[in-house]
Amino acid sequence: NAGVTQTPKFQVLKTGQSMTLQCAQDMNHEYMSWYRQDPGMGLRLIHYSVGAGITDQGEVPNGYNVSRSTTEDFPLRLLSAAPSQTSVYFCASSYGTGRGNYGYTFGSGTRLTVV
Amino acid sequence: SQQGEEDPQALSIQEGENATMNCSYKTSINNLQWYRQNSGRGLVHLILIRSNEREKHSGRLRVTLDTSKKSSSLLITASRAADTASYFCATGSFTGANSKLTFGKGITLSVRP
Image (cartoon, rainbow over all chains, first blue to last red; front, side, top):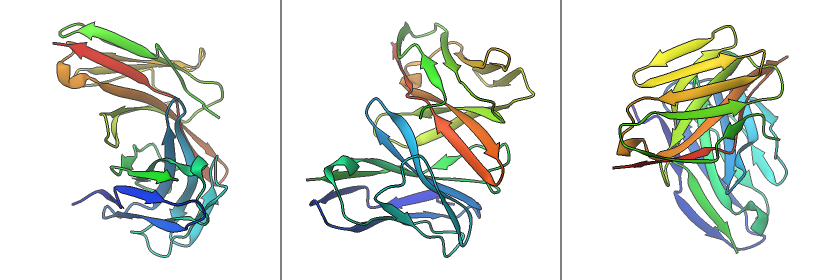
């Protein structure tokens, strides 16, 4: 049981490049989400999904796309990287659709630097 | 926008002492959760308290929730050096079909051996 697996752990991008951050969970969680963590800002929600085929925007969705074709995977796409997207990205999942009283399981994060 | 605001921002205590961290929030919630993050790692769920609960215990952790004051506290008893980490409160809100877990900025706890 691996929990939530994020790849890559580190990435450096040039401004304007695109890339996909991968997130996979093996707990059969319906709810998955992406957060970014910046110094002094806490964690901010980018996108979330309550099940395969269903996604919605969070607090800071601009510049990011998501899709959920399977229960296990929830990739985050950066369309055209900007220095403001330099951050640590966390994927998290939860039992149910997120409307229950369950804690979240977090991945170990992807540290992204855009130069 | 941050829902939870933790207090203090930083706390330094001696091993064996108790650590108390506070969290205040602004809007109605369904639950409040506390997470721990060790340096360079992901967040780990510690404890969840529902909006209709007032106190909850888990090992050395005690969480209280006062919905009338929109505040919560996390008490770590008999602290250890291994408790050194950042602690985040997060509020869970369900609105229509949406569900969100909103985090505060975190408290840095240092436990001196």
